[in-house]
Image (cartoon, rainbow, N blue to C red):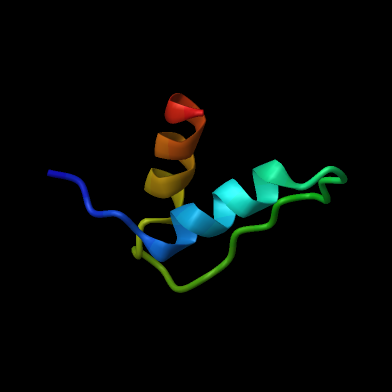
Length: 44
């Protein structure tokens, strides 16, 4: 079972914009930043 994260919804919003800016993901250590980006890349 995978958790649905709020950040994933923000990634979908970023992708749906007509004009995309660079994506910078920052945050605390070991909270799943790399994991959520990899999952987003595989799914989309």
